Length: 186
Image (cartoon, helix red, strand yellow):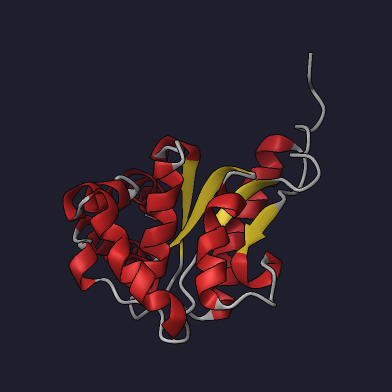
């Protein structure tokens, strides 16, 4: 039974929500996402449907409204794909997306990562830096987005909802998928 392609996620749904840092080079992000998509297609027999905020979200929303809609976008996705880099681990916006995924019942086990080959030293060095950045994550050091001033206050308050410790643990729980992606690079 079932030798054909995996079923598509259906209207208004996606296979994966993509967590990425706008500070990373867009071509390197696209390269990482394409590598993940090729692996998805090879294992499931079809191209993935993905949710990428900069391409899918309502452009009429200001950043505070966009932030408020993130949970609605996340629940429409079967999984999470983290385009892992130090910039993702340094971004309070990305940390908020990761935290929201877990707060909505998603698990790091339902997440995959793809390494964004940023910085010097090639993909292996980039993978090592991504693992180190996720391992060292702390909400108090994460940066709110530069271009989304109206969401910055809400993002700064996000760790206070459940406490900084649980917020940090939720974000660091994605270290597993990042380590798996890093191991695949080496």
